Image 1 (tube, rainbow, N blue to C red):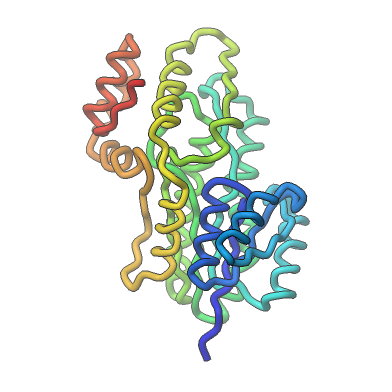
Image 2 (cartoon, rainbow, N blue to C red):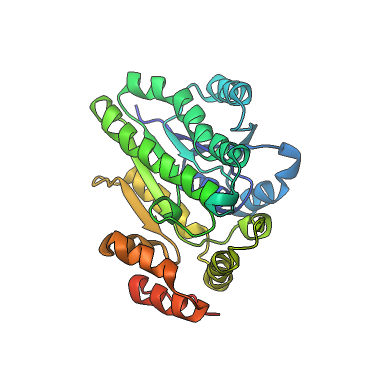
Length: 292
């Protein structure tokens, strides 16, 4: 008996999450989209109605053990199972290492790392018992490259990459697939939300300037979130699965470019004095023009 696949997409209210929820629904999945507030999910519901698809809303905060437990209990009550989980919900986090407090680091880790773990731990027992299922963790190219002046975000995404790689090996014997989707710059609300520039010491002006240069270039060239949604569906459906899927503007170039660099070349980029020299070096190593 063939059943309709049940998919959960966290952070479904905007950006990649909304695009993914709608795309999976359009592909015939029964989709549950988690949002922190149902009252603020009007755009998602309007988009679903326009496409003549359905996305069931579940109010859930991935930063809370209790909220995740209650939210998934509601999903299981309605659907009875979860076949595919897309861990998308997350937050940004700017700051050079010296200016990133332990409190700020832990706040971002709690959402971007622990939030994903709370959700996958909720669905894995059922997937193991059935011998099938997919965990798709949305990380970032910042999980493969130490993006300057974004220490909390980099730490969380690198950690999620490591946990995902470990998980893939651990659950392979149970028939459960893990996929890591690594977006570059993608159109989302993060451009409006992630504008914090601590600069508390005043000595890291150049580093923050380089971060903002990347943001500015990304704002001009950001890929539509549906590109990521298509990759998520491919990762779920493919008969030739991969562990990692870089995607969106700058994604493949950054991943491939950093892998081709020596660690010494990476550090040397930090010694470049002018923004113009940094922009030129970035294009040389990654094939991406971040001038604006």
